[in-house]
Image (cartoon, rainbow, N blue to C red; front, top):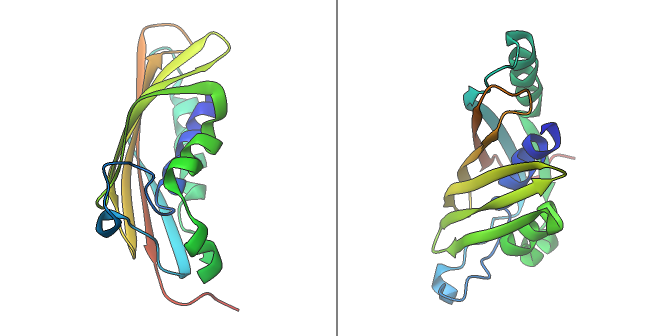
Length: 167
């Protein structure tokens, strides 16, 4: 389960990474990030996991907080090569089957089922993709690995171009 949560955060950040392979998107609807220094913030919006001690929930919240505020330089060459659809596929590999894959016109609306061992998680990414800012809500739902019922987690992942690359 921990791996799914980490991959969800990484892939949501990747969701802001480029152009659409969506056949319905027109060239005008294709969104590419601008080169520069990009800052990513991750906020835990919802975390319901029956059977999980508060200590573990607090630890998860702290782990996500450390991912917040990270910065990355995106060169012009990297920006020219970005591809959201491929980033999602590569980020999850064969662990996920996508039932919805709408990426284009500045928006992302992706949903599917991901499996790791016996753990199955419904995953959804929804939000906006822009040249200077991306904002994606990542929702994962499934059975709590600790027993006790269903779990749901939501993370808001926002990336912004904060200026030229540093050094």
